[in-house]
Image (tube, rainbow, N blue to C red):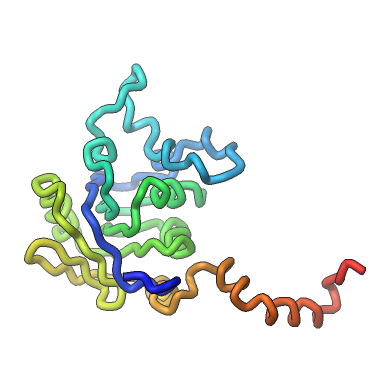
Length: 201
């Protein structure tokens, strides 16, 4: 449940994306970084691995589980370069939360900045969930940010969310741009008092 910027729970159907050490170049190939906005990033998500040599879609999970909002991944997901485009592409495709064995630190921090909870759990719990999604493509999965749990079917996974991420999501302070706008008067007062900021006069 999200109240304004406060994100305490996210849920929906799942998409399993199996494999360890899936890097940001697989998630969002480097040749698409030249675009000046994130608008089309959903189209480029896992662009190369989702397609056959002739350009047609293959049986990649993102092609089979369209409309899913919870990605379930394995170990060291989002490693490689620090490009924000990777979680941006996932968010724009429809991902609201990620369950995984572990995440690259910068990828996790980029998820936090977009309001996407990234929760870790042990290998067995994650692979069990991936298998369950394959058998239950319409099954609902819920990430409870405050309780640090993943719930599906009759199963509760006790997970772990980075403390800084949990605090930012629950307290509604993950969107730093919105936070600055909501405190614009204070920002302007502070800027006016700084000797190295020109007023433009």
